[in-house]
Image (tube, rainbow over all chains, first blue to last red; front, side):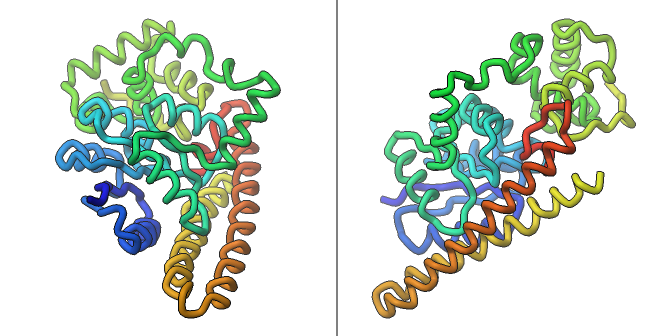
Length: 225
Length: 81
């Protein structure tokens, strides 16, 4: 029986290419598709596929945030992260979020199919380029331990998620809708993370988020709570 | 900002298209493997060229993102997208 997959990528050209490859072999069947993180979580909750094949860079919730979120609701789903890049921060945060594999987007299907087969059987997988780089770092003894500023280590994954969205200009109401939480819950997260970081306003929070590399851009125009 | 825009275009458009073209070539290669193995071999060669182009692109985008992210310490993925 083929393994079921939900395919998540905001580039249709990639989804079509991957779909064609997977359908060719018969080992995997595509249950559903999504082009953003929120939709990915919704579809995975509903369809409970064996595997979610998730692009890392998605609009709204990132692939990593969507992974954390969907595993909260559907812990049996195995997540394979697809990425254009092999930088250490992306790899480490993906694995920390619960992903079972990290695969570089390439011009062939070799890595992708190996990763899906490994994960389907309960294993894990890193693209060779990624594992080579990590091995070298481990051998040199300088793997990432200091990459996350210490103040941020006290924040939960959910608080980090809320901080990123606040820094990107989302209001509490918008964040509540995006994360499927109550408005008061989001406000409570904001208060808690501000207290933990010792900041009093959105500007301070945004500075932390930028410095930690949690967000790409700040949009200070919207400051609503 | 110009560097960031170029990195984003490279990431969002060019990289994805190269990867998607490679996947389509993979399908062709699978179809031709038994009937025309020499052609399948040539397709593999083209995929390797695309892979080289992707590696160059990856490096270029990482450098542009590093310049842009600067002290903020963003990952290339975050800065480019």
